[in-house]
Image 1: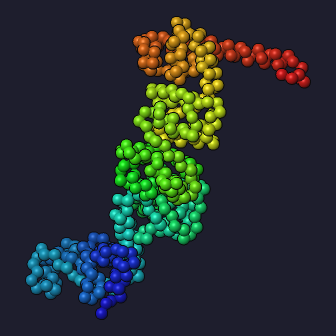
Image 2 (image 1 turned 90 degrees about the horizontal axis):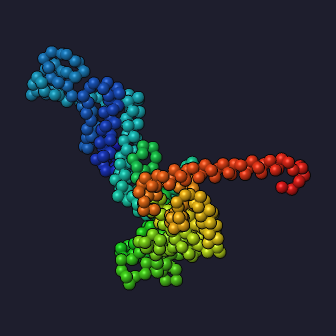
Image 3 (image 1 turned 30 degrees about the vertical axis):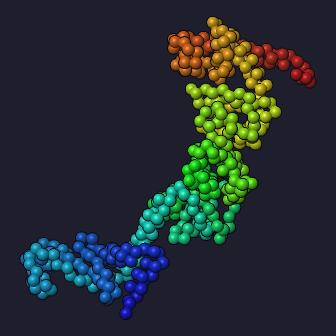
Length: 436
């Protein structure tokens, strides 16, 4: 007949999916902890689950001696031979202990240890099951909400979708199905081990991998991805097969594939653009739907300057700067956008300032402007080696030019200060009701 303890072991094994041996090991450890709580830590105590009796037996091991030195760890040879006639001095003799005498406090200790060890075992199993799933998609059910975090039931384990990884525009109710990106697996002591994300770019990439067979097979590759979760995203794709159009493969027949991704992301707009290894061509694709007139690249500062027609400026920047921000994230370059008119005005102002520099001809001025220098102050902030490389001069000549630019900047600041002073004096001389 199965004992109550054996039944409890089997129940833990089934419900928590913990191996039976692990449950027994936890139980034995708990009993040893309880015994040491009752009798002291210096005693050598072991526990063993007796399958036939269905109970945990405790054994205290003592060294057989002829004379006592320590009553807790030693036993006289006469007493030892009464228990085991074959024992000799120096042997370690296991003596069965009275489990019933442990008491209420020791039993409580055993219970706490069992609970803690079961939790540790569950955590270890969860970690082992999900550690290889980091970076994958996973589906679960919303179970509850804790301080803004969403606890998701994954079946055998629970995961957490932290507030910071949620999309502001998405709302969930208890029992809703949720698909998320496995961001991390931790061994945290008091929190869920599986950390999910709905805002990570990896979610978008994995959804396309799910919907587009060519991506899964490696024919189409996602080269880069940028998101403003809940609003808009851009992905850059390429193809290893010249006969396969990467953008068309991701869009699908009548937009079916991309719409499936949009639906899962609850209406997030997605731009699919062709990747190009040339940064200038890539940024032109990335800034779509706006058209670009010219691109200036400064590799020293890793910055691009885009010139767009006046009527295309708002489209290129996008709502609240969203389009240019995503394009910059996608390409990995800092991007500045100017309209044709504004670019021309800035260049004229730059020429006016640079003409105050001695021995700087028109070609040098145009070269400086083309590399993003718009003011004399820009020159004073430049590194000599950088300027020498741009102008193809010796570094000492670049140092001299920067020093001269510093003098011109002081003069410009003084002139500006005098203009403001004169303007204030004129304003003070006017009657109070005069229009300035």
